[in-house]
Image 1 (tube, one colour):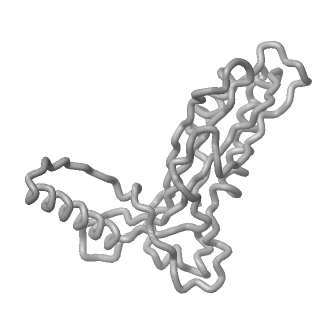
Image 2 (cartoon, helix red, strand yellow; image 1 turned 90 degrees about the horizontal axis):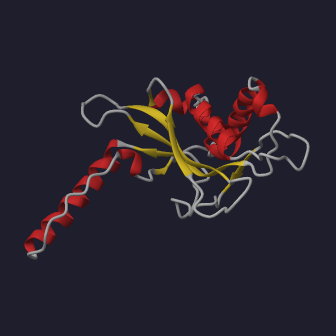
Length: 209
């Protein structure tokens, strides 16, 4: 399970307090809410937000590399230029985790437990900042889209790979005044530490996710 990093929440909260608060509140000071949206202010990076945790195994990366090499060889044979494109394993969409009857623990945690953890962290940050407590917020901090994947930690080696739970999401905050176009969107990623064997994650229908 991934906990909200203090440095991560500090950066988000500070940006929201400095850029998103009203200079002349029209309403009594209120808390900064954290909400979830499948369609954040910016265009979502994923066409469809995954509803479950997916898995990226070594073989998925090997297949992607083989396909990329094949395209490059074909372009070279046709006399075209060869563009070298690199990708990270985190860029792969992964595959569904099969053979699990009770799938409640495989639900994507971004819309639920992550949003709740972020709200608690925001509340704690504001509680420690008297200046922030006097501000009024009309627009929430929006967690947009988001995916969760179990991703292997090492491509090389003959032993079974260890896996980390990786979250990838966008966070945005509408300005309280002025134009709301071209809003800044922060792409965030976090991973569980340390990496564990797949057997650890799979215990009791993936309760440890």
